[in-house]
Length: 477
Image: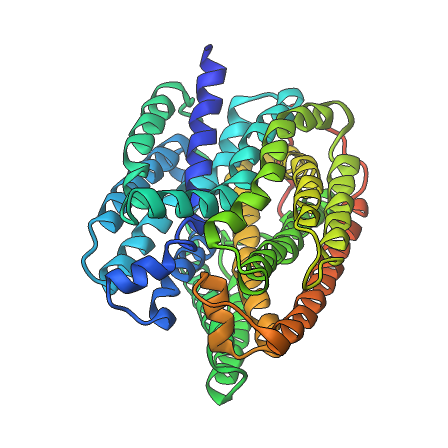
């Protein structure tokens, strides 16, 4: 194994761990709820706090990588994530576990926001697609693998080991990262503390309001949260026009390819992860499968995607990102149409076929789209572009959870929707038929979102790869 291979291995393991832990708690949630004597409405925050901290944290940690070098922040992220994992496993109360999950998520945010920039720093443009193909295995398979591992480890070992397992893996990845990631150059930059604070506050208000809707429906409290979040966004935009080094320089949107690629990633995450949640709810709530066997039906497609990701990454290096990324989204749309043929008694082979198409589509989209972002980012904005890409994807992931639960709760009560999602409730009789209507509606909404992502991907334009994109000159006042 040469130094490049070891570097790729370190990146793959790091991003895989972060993606796995976004969902690994899902199948362990009922066990944790009972073990720590917590209500499900509280324990659900074990999942949500992780997604929320990553969504907020990646907004600025990419820039911190510019200032202190990506290697230093990435490696620190591995250390924080590993320590946070050990603390999660040792938690004695639900409050401790939620707090330690926030620490773990902060480490994951440090990793995710700098991984793309590290690839750009360490590999030439004609090899980045292949490397992004490997790292996309981490993002692509990680979320689904987390669900499977959560079921296996909880069933056969114990829920605490879904966190303890990260400790030796994290130490192993940190060893390779410290040895083989190039130090890189520092970029003269500043942190945008006011911008980070206001954007973080806005995301927290909006996310908390959205989650509250899934628990209580639309009411005065969450309406106020949304209004407050929107007002804070206005304040954020005003601040960004006044600070010397804004968190989100408007010049990043001057590149059509760069901006369209980032928003394609957001809509793909928002639309497609909701599909995964809904299919699991169908298998558990209507077909009566255990959480463990439900996840196994989705696993083969993700295995296929993990194998094909590096190969499609090479294709991206040869022909650019536009066609592979767009075709990948189209194939994901086909998989949603396949899932939409499910009914109360349909063959479970439909899920296997849909998952197979999912694996192919995602293995085309992720490496191509990630490569497009970094290939077309100004060199002085590598860290910011990488962080913003992960931020938008993670906001989409959080939104997908809200979307899935909200649509499901239209046809059944929210309490039942939560129980089905967690794998502790099964629907019977007419309730199953009503829930099936909700499932079909959610799939069609998700398909519409994927279509938006595909349109953005196709409209990004033809890219011209350069060895090192030159900084876009800032507009002088």
